[in-house]
Amino acid sequence: MRLFVLILLWFPALVWAADIRIGLLAWQGEESAASEWRPLLKALQDGLPGHRLHAFYFDLKGMANAVSDRQLDFVVTNPGHYVALEAQHGVTRIATQIIESGQDSAHTVGSAVIVRSDRTDLQTLDDLKGRRLAAVSTDAFGGYQVVWAALKGRGIDPEDGDFVPYFTGFPMTRVIDAVDSGAADAGTIRSCLLERLEAEGKVAAGRYRVLSPQDVPGPCRRSSPVYPGWAFAAAPQTSPELAREVLIVLLGLSPRVTGQTWGVPADYHPVHEMLRELQIEPYAFLREHRLESQVRRYWPIAAGLVLLLIFWVVYTLRVEVLVQRRTRELSAALAARDRLAESIEAHRQQMEHLSRLSILGELSGTLAHELNQPLATIGNYANSLTRRLERGSLSAEATARAAAEIASESERAAGILAGIRAFARKRTRIRERVALLTLVEGAVQLFRGMIPDAPPVELSDRLPEEQRTVTVDPLQIQQILLNLLKNGLDAQRAAGCPEAPLRIELTAGGASDATISVRDRGTGMPEAERARLFEPFFTTKPEGMGLGLSISRSIAEAHGGTLDAREPDDGPGLVLCLQLPVTPVTDKDDEQAD
Ligand code: ADP
Image 1 (spheres, rainbow, N blue to C red):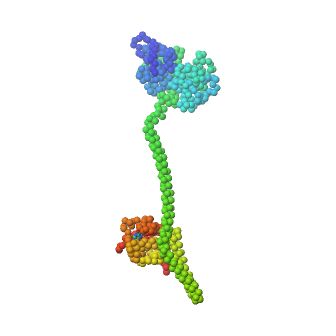
Image 2: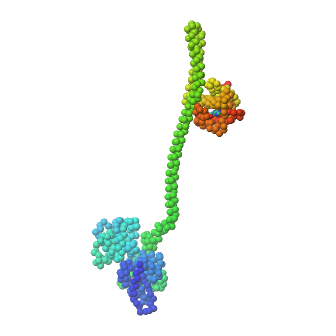
Image 3: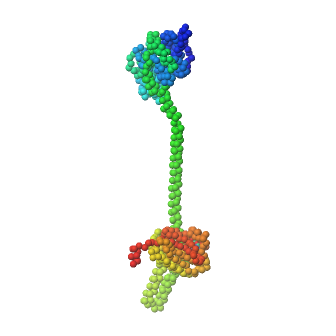
């Protein structure tokens, strides 16, 4: 804030005198500054009789604004503020203040960190970690920033929360009050202030101690390095002639008159270094550059990346969840499919078995008849033997013949029973190499043997020599053939021609198959219904189970073959075609045949 205080020091009688406007930093408040700078200003005015001197007092910001508005010809300010004004507004130092006699202008400002002498726990600057440090203001160069830099150099930075600054404001004696009352553990003051106050009797000697005192000559103790003193600087628009005039007067000032001297302009490079280290004006942009500007510049990209990352995480999680769910579903489906396949296989075997039993049931009358034959013969021989024995006409020769007949007939009966048992038995997988013709002839024989009024079965064999052998379960193939013959007979009975001959043809079905077609002259079947022939439980018979053909087809397929129905080329009826892969004839077979 600008302090609107104009102190007119001297009104020269000469009306032509040029005005010189000097801005002074009032770091301890305006009154104190006015009294502090009065001797200097008076001496300057005395040395510049051709000019009228106007003094203006400012705080840091107010002075920067005044320079920027070209309201000042010269500024007198602290080193930190000078380098900021130099960098931002182009002011140029013409002289540097020397406070103590014997100092050079490059080494005048330092700071002391004081603690109460009874605070034995605080010996060096390192002990300030976690403590409260009083200072006038964050902008005070000698009153804070110098110590801040020294502490930061030791790895103790308030911006990392390593100590807590406690700002008291001006005047600097408030810092001492805060240390005294215990409001702060330590305080930062300009070097020499403590000594001066002690000399004036305002502070009891020995009440305060300086932490980490530097080994420097002279009475003033300090805890920090020293920096150049205050700068007397010309504004950019100030003419070099005027600057030269003022400089000559400044350099000639006696310390006895003003209490201070001004030397050649010092190198403020160490001040730059320090402020750059702290990243404060004029290096505040580094901080902004480091954080805010990066954020400001790259936030759309960063936000995009974060969004992408979130999207990617969500997407990955979702995919993962979906994959796990699908995997579970698939595993469950596979397990269910396996269970289903097992149960279908079990049912198929069961149905096969049932079908055989069903055929047996249907043929049981015939079977009884078949068994009756040998039993009756055996009975006859036994009776005849008994009668002859009673009559006394039983010769040894007749006895032997009868016994042989009885044995032969009982063998025949046992053979029939063994066949039935084998047929009815639950079967595991069997594969035998057999001649197809033999197999078919056996089935026909079984069919005609079981059904007394069976029609004749015409057998036509047109199989080529190399396609006559199959590797099959003979009983299962016979089961299919029996089924087809019986169905054919049923259809012929339904059509009213049970005595019409059934016909079996053996032909080559391609190079590697043999086809057995069973043709009847029965009712036939319309094409639409023919598709349902092989469906389980499809039957048109009152006593039928509707399983024969579906089981027959599954047996054919288990042998790598097929079973289909077609309309005959000549006349009514139906043709059922069983196709089986043939077993190739090897040289070894030929040798065996020879
Ligand atoms: P089932 O003989 O117990 O009915 P199948 O599966 O052997 O069972 O036959 C199913 C149905 O197919 C029979 O009911 C019949 O209607 C029909 N069928 C089978 N063979 C023939 C055929 N040769 N001629 C006409 N229809 C037939």
